[in-house]
Amino acid sequence: MPAYIQLLRLSTEGRGRALQDPDFLFRTQAAIEVPGIEVLGIYGVLGEYDFVNIVEGPDNYTVARYSMEMAVKVGAHITTLPAIPIARLHPTDDGNPSEVEVGRALDPDAIPDRENL
View: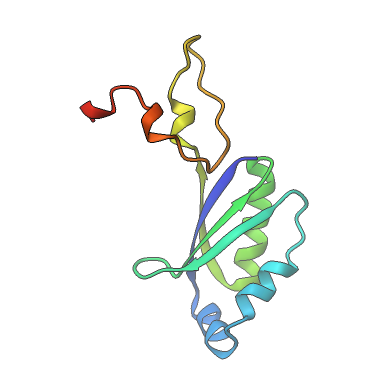
């Protein structure tokens, strides 16, 4: 299933809620019911964004619906990015992109000409 990276920047109201109740974000995330969405993890980060959320979903429309609900209920601006495993960009012998599981790292020994990187 495709993976998506969500970059969250809390609004003033969202920051207030998160400060008053540290579990607010987890509860809100668990309460959002969009079929087909699986939350893989949420991380607090330093810098331009407050949180990074990683989700899997069947398609862009489903993930967009989840993003809208999350933004409204949490009080955040969310930028959602489709995540494409770089192994899918490496063509196979027949010229088609290779089929690699989402999130699965390539075996470094299997990379051709890796000494020339």
